Amino acid sequence: MTTPRTVAVIVGSLRKGSFSRITAKALAGLAPANLKLEIVEIGDLALYNEDVEKEGPPAAWTAFRDQVRAADAVLFVTPEYNRSVPGALKNAIDVGSRPYGKSCWAGKPGAVVSVSPGAMGAFGANHHLRQSLVFLDVATLQQPEAYVGHIATLFDEAGQITNEGTKGFLTGFMASFASWIEAVLGRA
Image (cartoon, rainbow, N blue to C red; front, side, top):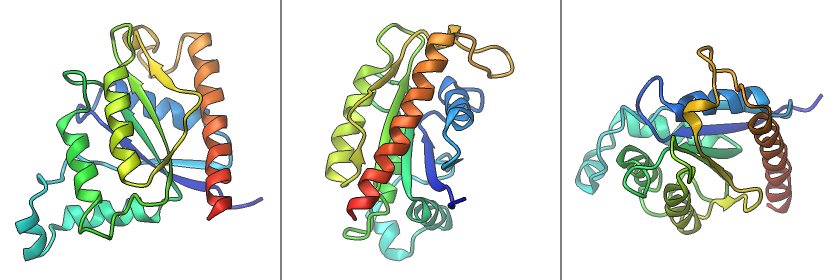
């Protein structure tokens, strides 16, 4: 058996019991055997400041960059705050993109799953994130798109998906992402 591709999972919400985190864990369970998903935490990242970078980056920034850089691919699972990404997620993107010319994101295959208790499935956050990913040279899976609405109704207390349609969709999404990773890395 070949070594599984490693996927750095960036969860946009800092709340331990967030729907984004529950979804990220569920996606790890639905992923094909050739993918190994690992959540890379963003809660300890100080706000990006170029002056701090010049003085010597904080250990949390360096650890974050190293974890993302070591992964084969990246998966973002995010809620929507005010029609965009949460500030902590945007900060993580900025921390990973610096110092200039040494972005840990560049060239990686990626995907976005956005979740919301509302009907739109965090559409705004998904598309704002995609704008940043274009600039960061993350080859983002275009189809299928994953906007998961009514997220509060889709899991039981143990974090298991209770809606078979959603489970089937997310299983297919992860299979498509695995194929996308191979296609992108095969071009490298």
